[in-house]
Length: 116
Length: 183
Image (cartoon, rainbow over all chains, first blue to last red; front, top):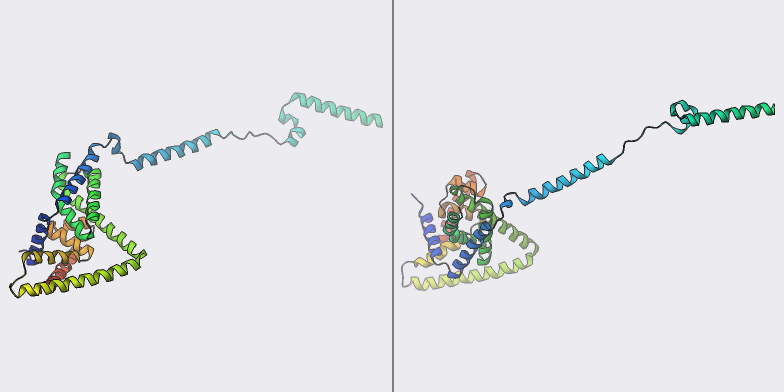
């Protein structure tokens, strides 16, 4: 059994609807049409939320940047130190250099003997 | 789907406006809230089953009304001096209205035994308008819109116990205030 206050409230509120200004009713009709109009003009691709598309593109751009950075770095070529190249020419494997060094060594020895 | 949604919106627009108007006490704000609610409803929930539309619609409306109150509170916080003056003016004005109404009622009651129906309706609307926001929303959803306790809790996103508390307090306040105004 409804409370009398509740019944009175319902009657009052229903009556207030009947007394609604006609200009308000027209504006409400316009609001309804506008809301429904945006639904009919919606593009098919809009099923995907805009935020999701933007986020996906951002993520893809970042991934591309990282990938290009990783794949563009050249591997460091391991070469022996310069001192080691001259001390251990066999490691360097340059026959011409070895020949030149041997010649210089022979020249130095000849010079010493000449001085003696 | 669009035609049934159009019928649904036509069935709820006046009540939604009235609820928003009671909450905001401003016609334009109420219309803005209804517009915002309808657009969100169509944009996000038109594909849902039609049985879910009422609860969804009123949840969006309720959230919009609560947002309005939050913004109003924030605005009043920054412009408190205007609010103080406005409150003082409104209080004085409303006190005068009550005095005037009571004086007029006294004159009428000297010739009539009971208040007229329209005056009682006005008093009821005034009392509902003066309820705290959540009690007001709860009362309107339960009593006027006819939602169950469970549905109202879903719309207002709180527990059923909270709904029962809001509702009983609203009814108690309305009863007391109505007796004062009708006296």
